[in-house]
Image (cartoon, rainbow, N blue to C red; front, side, top):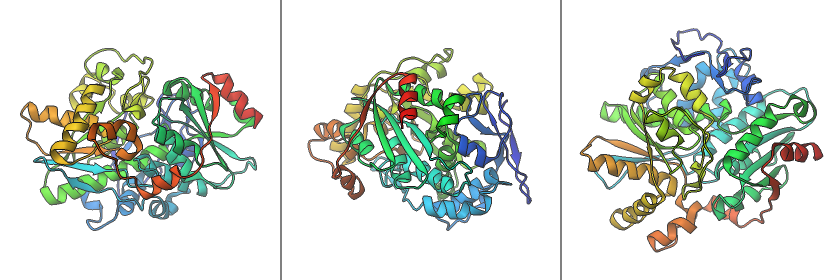
Length: 445
């Protein structure tokens, strides 16, 4: 199955979703969101990507308004279609400002103003709003499995905390997230459980996928996912790219060029799908940390997943990014894909220097993940590129105080919502990095 583009007409045809692996029947968006992962182990994608024009969007609309227009074709013909405006209004009342930086022709798209101070809040809140409206015939609680490299788990925990009939189980690599991230993951209690896995993020992701694909386990413990493998997470992330690009287009009359920090490729795919739908996104470049699976692939090597290595930008410590399947579905011609997209690897030393230099010269403080994108912008400038660029700020630097504060020489102000979470007690249970260990834990509960 390869990506196709269709022009949306005045009457929207029902949108169906298929697996990237081609071995599962087409389903509705509600079914795809409820399942998380396709039965054949693939990721759900639309049968075709809709095509939209900038004129379809309210120039004075909010982020929620932009999302409702952008996502309407994806929900066409579904039971949630009529609820979409309310879902967007409920979930996307988050500020995502496009702010000018001191450097010439440079802006930052700040995505860390949600409850857990990371961009993951947008997708998690949207998914929760959808799940609250999906009918369920099974009286047993639905367990939402989340593998996190730092930020996803807290966002999902916050979005689903105290939600009746739902249980969240967060898996994170023990000792490989920042102390404040770890505290967030364990601070919810009630229906949110944190498991600190003796392994890497890739182990957590593998364990979640194995559980979701285990039909015998699913028969005893109904499961779904809230990672970016879930369309309910990925689709709403498109909204802030569309909203920023449309605002930029109206003001400047040109597409928005974007540098996206990425690890598991979910945030990057959201940006690329917006561009593929015809909205004014220009050049897209991706900044990775020292985990070079994607940079090597885009440099011409065969795609080869590998064990993740630990870096300062821990939320991007991914050696086997799941959304590669969606990337290859969207761009089936590898040669053409490599011409459309540039991917770069940034070392820990470069991250540290970028944070330190920009704090001292410009008074701008970035988290380690955002710093990978800032570093690449610096490289573009050094090579003579004077184009307007927007870097995507994925998390608040206060979440990474142990990395950032020694580099800038002073404390980072903590957002009120993050401070409230850090004030709660936090508990996480240990778990072996083994598929059967997770299965046993789920069955024992």
